[in-house]
Image (cartoon, rainbow, N blue to C red; front, side, top):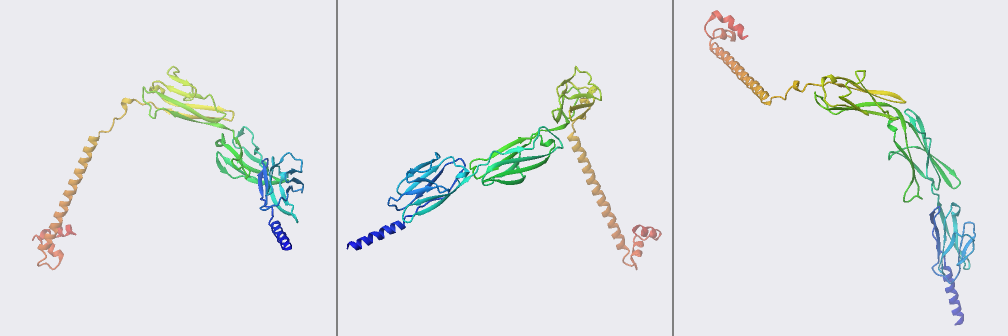
Length: 385
């Protein structure tokens, strides 16, 4: 009986030993973060668990620390679990970690620790300020330290545009570069170009850098007026609006190629020319001229002051309606008279044809004999033909 019991106990211990397998999971952590490595076993008869690094150096044996590294700490040590943490993870920590269960034979499980390299804030190169209209430039955005390689995107005032991308490996990390070629004009002045970096390690946000273009260009000018059709006695303001960079200021007002007359009545304030009370002596061509270091431009406004008493009054709608009614009535009367005239002559023709048709050998003879007067036969025949 004792022999049977011993054999039975040995078989139970063997089954339990065979069921003791360490269980681990692969881990992914961002550079600078914390990695928790956990090893579990379902059945354990107080056999020790051990964690070792990719270099096969023992980190912890049970609750005993084996490697002097202040970043590595014990989280939990029981008969069924051994969990350790590695803080401030670097790319050098990446690799295969081994959990060992010291049974006979020793059973192991391996977990791979993946470390994501965080891309650095992008830099935009190739921009000089100020630019001149017509310049050709190449903007280059560079970010380094990403693992895997980051995605670099360009935006022009928040609208995405495509750049030329280039990826280079540097050890375990990647350097990503994207370039834009631009032919700048005045419409690019004040435009914001943004380089944005997207990466799996940037879960909540993204890295980006923005540069605003400053483009210098020659001015162009427009004149705005306060009323469309100026009349005598009215107030009129002309505003000179120059566009240019640098801003062309001040502006120069002239009239008909000379100086402005009567400065007591015509007020010049900055870019505005104001007439307090217009009269016909103000008629003429007014020019606004603007200049910066890249050129000069001007705009002209031809002023024609009209007499308010000489303007035609509003149309008399009653008179217009009466004229239209008379025209319609006359047209109807003409149609009626013309219709009656045509109807009467058609009847005469039919009647005369009937009178001569009884004993006439043909239609012409019937027409001639219609009223019995042969003297006018040729005349009537000619008429009806």
